[in-house]
Image (cartoon, rainbow, N blue to C red):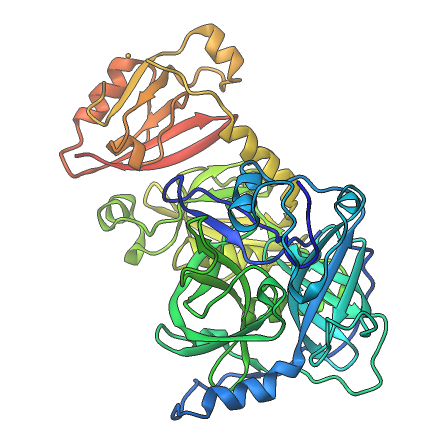
Length: 519
């Protein structure tokens, strides 16, 4: 499919609610370069809650003062980049069928024969330092061989207009952030963004987005914060808590600032929710600036490192009844659903079903808090981790390792690709049968453990809600090791309706702890 400068954009479709609805990365096609270290002070942040009257001149004044620090980013990649599955159809909805050649905004276009040799994209960024440091989204510059930046006031219709070369200093896939720097500097001093405190934002607060949608440079849109803590991100299983806004965000806005009523940056515009028939429908997402600000020293060093323990946690808060049954004080903590063999938590002695209540001397309220603590721990550090196991408190010393996202994503892909098996009931909406010696060998089951395998899970059942999957091998029911189908049935019958059922299952070579609610 042919691509045109400033028209194609990087689109990511994630089926969440239905096949007709997807998440779309809100940039135009952006296809990093070698990093280099940079030492500059982290921008100061104004932590005062946004307050004061909003009148007819409020947004006019913000636009006048802050638009100059926003830049237009154009990228070029020599190698042709393939679209995600279904991407061709999505792009046709915006730009017509292959062979059509819509005129690029600003009169810029290129001959179809160039499409096989280069691919061009656009996005937005904002200046954070007079030395030419610019924040943007990683997906805007990911894979780019050449990056050019135009500043506020540039006339893109003028072929002689000055574009400034830039290079990638550091980038982070997890937060979809990138730090680039101008390698050519203008003669005039560069304006700098001011940072606000994204933790102070609340639903209903006014915000302004500035960006370059569809190549329409320095476009202003205004709205409110619609919601906080929306899980989304560039890495499956490690979604980031985002700010949701109805300030219009469209393809090309990616990497632009989201500003509070004082004109301070509180987020980086990253993605939109779309029905594939249109661009903005009033649901956009911005990465909180506090998250990016904490990463700036690492982005400037050229490498972002994070800690990892080798665990999976239950994303939902502990059910009150389950917490009482497990002996968890206050019902607060992070339930370990699985512990990866041979990784730090496993080597330290943690097990699936443990509830972590304290990490490195700090109380753990829930799973989100634990994840934040772990990823922000320096790899190689040895930290005490306190858990509740069988109603008793135990403490282990865990040596935190360095997170390898590629390795982690490979493991998750392998788990998702496990084939479902059909088949033979428990009252929880799942069918079970005995494990044969062949199955035990194939699944590398621990010796003398696991005699029952799940063959089918009904939709919307208690088992499905609790995370049970076909091919799970049941090792324990309510902490009792089970060796037969009849024993599993017997243990389940002991639980009254509405009671909690805990299962320890073997899945893809790892023990997983699940909590179900009997209906």
